[in-house]
Image 1 (cartoon, rainbow, N blue to C red):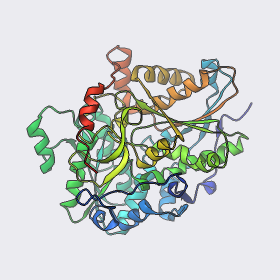
Image 2: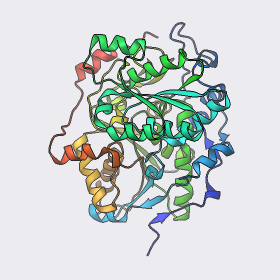
Image 3: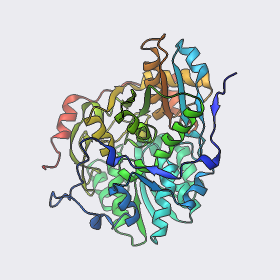
Image 4: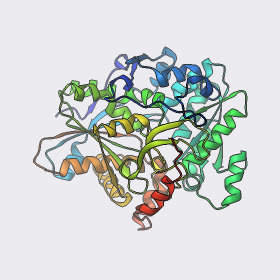
Length: 448
């Protein structure tokens, strides 16, 4: 019987992160100072980020060494397994080979600790003792709570209100790791209080939670801000996923024809896909499929423009696909995909037509996730069901085509079972954001 799970020994864990920036055709527009509209240097950002991370954010070095202290924490769960989804293939009746990189084996059940551990480490090296951050579905907040606990730091998490109410066990996980959690918008920041004054019943958004966490960081001397996606250094840290997958596929004597990932802010998709970019640029026939929710269609219906990463306008202006920084997405259960913007790296690769974006509805995603669970045994996070549906679409386009598919199963759904209950009860609905509402949000983009 062929090996179903492909493992790497710890000695084969990547010792460097891959920096995609110098390999992006057409380059990357720089972040802009919102006051002057001129390229922003690291000086202003040093109020909330350590200089070591800002250097990574702007680095043109193709490879960046991973410190030994980070590798030691990674070794709690890395390298993660690459698994051939043979039962899923049979359930689909396809001749396609489907592999998935399983990031649900991390302590918090997702890919997020790959960057949380790194960010906590570099902040501690800079003398920071407390991290303020936001979270949507709670996977990023859980990851930062875990990372700060491992490194003896404090953590304050602003959790988007709709997820705060939907996902109580994510809060329990963060509390277990010692973090403080509040629903966002909150009474703990000036910006949170102003949002609640305008709309006391708001469901919140990642943009609002980011604004609150940044305000927290700039008003406490011992505190820096940490972001779970979007920024270049975050995507850099996630490349351990694709670098491992590449080695594992080589051990299996295989190579992907298409790589699939879900897209919210862009980190897990970049982590699995960008380590294969050089092969594509060198002429290898490989496709990259980014799957986003139709209710938050950043890549497929957003505009490539300069916009704020948060709602209050406290961040630099970033060149990214955006629905507008004051866009409030509906409360779909894939909370980690409810973000108004897309990582500048993913946006640039989409601009170059290297990434193919598609938008899908949540009912079809849950249907694919349930089929996956019933065949492979793993209940996927709602976010990850988007990647699974993308893999299904590729595998069934021509069931007789011997295509090889790789997707990133970015997390398990053990703490998202309430959403599965609602799916089986027929209480979930598809939601496509109205074009006129997107146009209204985009009309508020900053003038650059």
